[in-house]
Image (tube, rainbow over all chains, first blue to last red; front, side, top):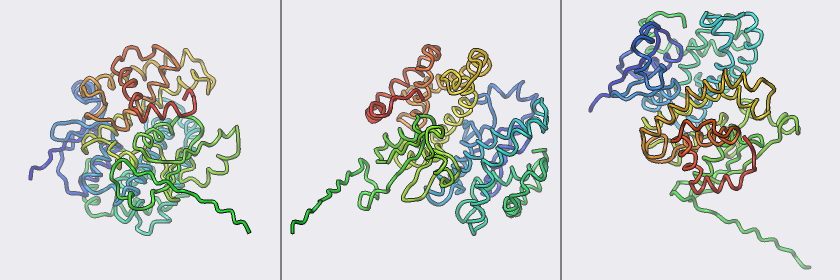
Length: 209
Length: 235
């Protein structure tokens, strides 16, 4: 059988590329983990990428843009998309809710990380609570109701990797933000402890987020 | 005694495609959304295009009635649209759309094509997040400086997004955004184009393939029929 050749293009950080890297690690799939610095991006790469954006997944030379589209593609190929159409719909719903939460959180997050100018305390006062309320009560409910310890169904899925990565960042950058949602820390620890993920975490390049 | 007997005749309409449910009860689909097009319209159109019967439940805006305040805590994410199937809910418009579309051949013919349907939809979402800062003021839903917002958000987001769509249509050459048959992202983009072009005629004139695409998609007979039957709303 012919192996598919994958190249994942992103910046030298985890962020929205990390769930894809984790799915590849868990499924034991080889891929080129191409990390592009900011200088290289503007000088060389931006106009090679189909929507002038990264991440991009190249599949036998053909590009797929948009991190969630890439995530769904890889999830479907390697069994991280639930066992039924209903489970797949819920995985989709959580991914899209996460994106909406992220849009709400970004004004604060970007200023905190130094990606944007602004008053970090003012941004926090405006964004932090409403963003959190959009997502974490629902994730907490799912974890409380699902005996498996995963978010959806009885096996690890794409959104387990997605949520775990973000909760890890929140632990590092905003301790206390999720103090009312201890189930999310239990979940993150569970996903990080999966052998293939533990091995990946130990060998992956270190980055802040 | 005269006994009045009321006979109800249940008419079962067979789906156009052979589907396992043909020999069992059709699932009861209920779509809950506000009485606007908004994020619910693409869901309604996918259901219409797929030929799926559904209850199109429209709640008044919170300022016009208590129904949403009462229903909100019963929804999975405190939001709409939400699809209820035999009592179980799916939240998030695109999740609902993918659920229906993938079961009716409307989500792309291959995994790679499905990824491109998803990518264009998410690119639209990013565009809409920016563009709506101008559009909602233009449509009168929010207060704001229309000219300033058009300059800061309207033009830049348009000029980042629609060239990609124009190019995509030129590349597929099929008249559809992905592959050679209609997918749900065709409905999404055509709906957006109709809202924008009627809010501001001429705004998308630099994108002739985009405008042709809107005409083509909205002349698909099930979509045309849906548009003719839906309430007349600006968005």
